[in-house]
Length: 266
Image 1 (cartoon, one colour):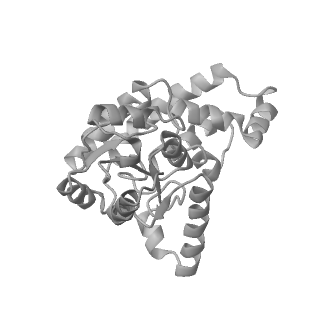
Image 2: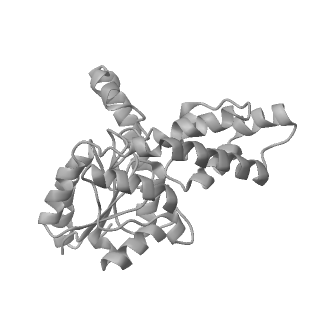
Image 3: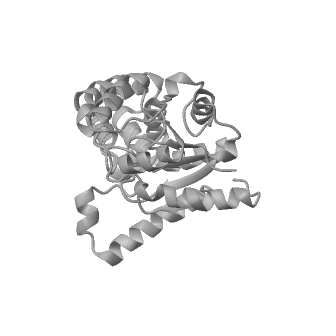
């Protein structure tokens, strides 16, 4: 009765500390249309399939209002598709620069594998985007046992299909023997919907949205408030655990193993 598999998100969890690659591009895509969106707005749907993320931004009341002020109507599917083409072009031009593993994740993988735990992954990036990210991450020492993208399943997050596909490919069952760890609200929803133990990551996360240097420089009380605010978001979506950084995940796994031995379920 132990955890047999861990499913990690990519950007903001395993690579790209703070999840900055897509955020800057979303802001630029709307700016190219003469609509200024905020950093907070750009981050809010993070973790979703990127075209769904873009569609969700267009449905936000303030953004839709700005669009209507400029164009006399709210954004439609043609607008979303046009902006998504722009998004892909811009993202692919920078993506290789945002695949640096987050501190602690490579050592974590080594410890997990020593315990016989398999490592899967899910993402909001498409298959073609992940070809770039996974290849660059592998050069830097990060390579999970399995990668599933939204292109491999009927729908991306918050649906559980990517986790189920990881379970199939890695031979993991039952679902209570799996842990999903991520850095966005949609990560938490994905894990909860899949019926696995779900863990939110604070530092390095898209929800926190700070670089490693900004975290180090942030006054302790201010950082504490920011971290507590993110934790509340995760807990509200049903996260079973919230940890400071990805390198602490195996301490949670030890707790979960103890709970499994007592008959607990997610």
